Length: 173
Image 1 (cartoon, rainbow, N blue to C red):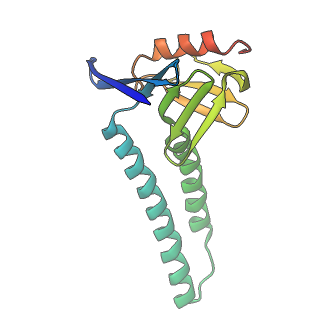
Image 2: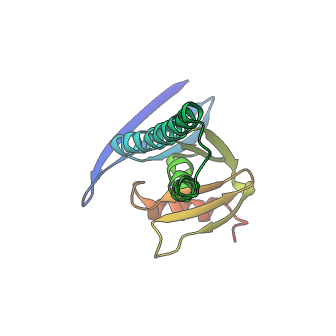
């Protein structure tokens, strides 16, 4: 097996976009893999934000439970309201942190999506729709397994990525 890797750095207005193209030759077949990934410092900020939200929420609930056990006081309306507000704020922030794609690997038979917590592979025929509104910074890609959020500003060559998706996936809406 022969593996050839070519890495290129492209400077953009406010970010460095890392585009890695890997060409692997296996037993006489030529397959080209394109990897679109977000810069490492943006992944680190997502991890820090996710960990901070989890730690602060668990610390708030833990301290509330401990104080209620030691004082023998029931929950007040103000506490319930603050928990509700925190729950709503977390519901707005956590999906974009967790479901946003860190890297996309384009293969001949499908795509591999890697996000903060897991990685999935979707075949081209299993992609259902792509929605990329101008007013959002996310493009929404719907597959048979999941809904993926692709950040237009973070992934390098976003237009090339969308062009590839539309060319390879024939049944998109």
